Amino acid sequence: MQSENPMIADFVKLLNSAAGTLAGMGREAGETAREKLRETFGGMDFVSREEFEVVKDMATAAREEAEALKARIEALEAKLAG
Image (cartoon, rainbow, N blue to C red; front, side, top):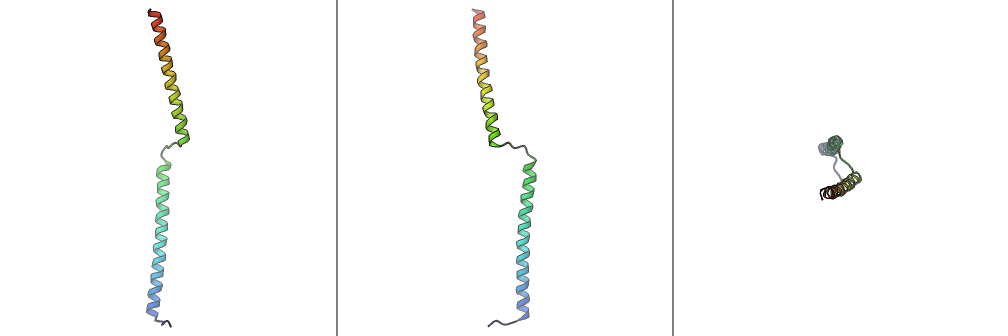
C-alpha cells in the first residue's frame, strides 16, 4: 500500500521534470555539436577517395610520360653529338 504524502509526490514530480530537462539538454547539445562539426568541415575542401585515386593515377601517368620523353631527348642528344 502506497502512502499519499504530498511532499514526496511533489519531490518525485520535481525529479522527473529535472531528468526530462537534462535529457533534453543532452540531446540539444549533441545536435548543436553535430551542426558545428558540419559547418566546420563543410567549409574545408575535402576530396573523395575516388577523386584522389583518379588524380593519383593521372600524376603517375604524367611522371611516366615525362621519364619517357627525357629518355628520348637524351637519345636524340647522344645521336646529335656522336
